[in-house]
Amino acid sequence: MSENDKFYVERCLDGHPDDFRYLVRRYQGVLLANLAGKLGSRDRAEEAAQEALIRAYFNMGKLRKPDSFFSWLLGIADNVAKEHQRKEQIQRQREIVRSFSEESAGTELSQDYALESAIAELPEAYRKVILLRYYGGHNCNQIAEQLDMPLGTVTKTLSRAYAMLRESLQQQKQAEVYEV
Amino acid sequence: MNCEESKELLVAYFEGLLEDSEQQAVEEHLKDCSSCQAELQELKGLHDRLVTNGKALAQSNLEKDVMNQVIREQNVRLKATTRATEALKIRRTIMRSPMTKIAVAAVIIVAALGINSIMAPSVTWAQVIEPILNARTIVFDLILGSDDSGMVQHEIFVGSRIKRTMSNMPNMTMIIDTDNEKLLALDTDAKTAVYADIAGELGDRHRSFIKFVRQIIGQLQDGQVEELGEKVIDGQKAIGFTGKGQNEKVTIWADPETALPIRIEAQMGQEFSFIMKNFEFDAAVDESLMSMEVPDGYTLQETNIDLGNASEEDFVKSLRIWAEIIGDGTFPEAIGTQSAMAQMPVLIQKVTAMQVSEEKGTEIGMSFAKGMLFHQTLESQGQWKYTGAGVKLGDAGKAIFWYQPQGSATYRVIYGDLSVKDVAAENLPK
Image (cartoon, rainbow over all chains, first blue to last red; front, side):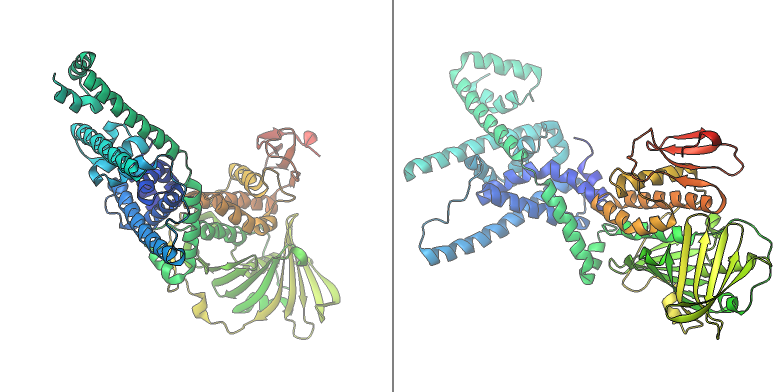
């Protein structure tokens, strides 16, 4: 990890839009993981991640604490996801009305959709730690610094997140069994 | 350690977050506990799943799309004026700004044209020069080079103020205050404004073509003026005079009845020439258009333009820009003020496409301008030759330029790799 988020945020604000790319590089994986579970397909996640990043760029002036760029970005992504879900719902309802089809044409699911949707359901504090650790390439010390919490708390949060993910994945599996 | 304690530490265990003593205790427990071993396997399975999925997602590349969209969107925002103000609140995030600043560089190159040779002041010649010397306002078109060079600069000259627009950069307007040695550049598309200080060494030169012509005329001595007779110019009968100085020549074609100039051709040094035409003398000019205030709705940008003391080093830098950025690796057909002005839009376009920062863009523009200012000093005083047409940047075997510094017995030769050597006259490249 080279410069911290604050450095790049301030570069952007000082008229170096090009430096935004470093933040894009740093958080694209995190955003996709966060969004894929919510939106159900890789394509939709990419679209929403792009939108979130662009919104973040043009609203950077409103970011009060450049240190908290990540949390702020994640908040934007969650909003974008909600908007997309709403739009999709409306669209799907229309499609159902129109064609009586059971499902809209199969969307291409992400590689591990079960996992992604389990992550999407995690409460925010746990979601952030999982996202940063496995999708943002942070080690636990970096997470502690980024989220401003003691290392011990990161460890506990991570353990608890594992437990929740397991539970959620297990439930999904059972649901599938019943469906079949 | 019991199973409950162990299970709680397993994630921290394989993440390597435990202290040595805890790590050992967990290992000890695992040796004999099949239930915890199974638990560990399962957690590791989830860990691997996370890592695999993380890697898969990290391979996606949003960077290009996002950056393109950011830049496109930013331009759209800048064009819609009302929204532009909002976008500008993000302090100085303006893609178009290098444009304004580079264009300032361009205008300074032209503005700084001057003659350094000193001649004794002398008599004026006849009535034809009277309006040039005394008119309070003069409106005219100026063409760098010859009539077919295609770039027309429209200039309004009022006392100490000049307003200048250029046909190849239609969105740029410059207002120059020669008394206070300040220049205001306005980008009418981006609604941005830049002030430049043109004092210092540049202040010794002339910033108006009118003043330039006035000075040449003022320096001509008796016997240096020659009558050329009559000819028809643009359908109009004209009588011509040529005045020659050491290093410059001015030809004035005037209406034989009114004695008002119709066309002025000026030549300076070996390669620099310009034509002035479509004159209007003492025309009524709305002086509010010549204001040095930033107009309403424009955003003022900061610059620190330092164009004093241009050196050979600056010239070499500008040659690099010429080859690397403008010529995609090849040196141009010709260099000099006229070519520099003609290539300015290309430079702006390429620098914008490079998506460099505003700072960097300005720096490139200024380096280019400064190098050209150095070249201008050669135009008026020294011997030089450009031989770089078509030479590839990096070709150490080919000379691209040579000149003789004032008072030097040897010549300076610049090669395709931009190295510079002192060379005796007899060894000069052809």
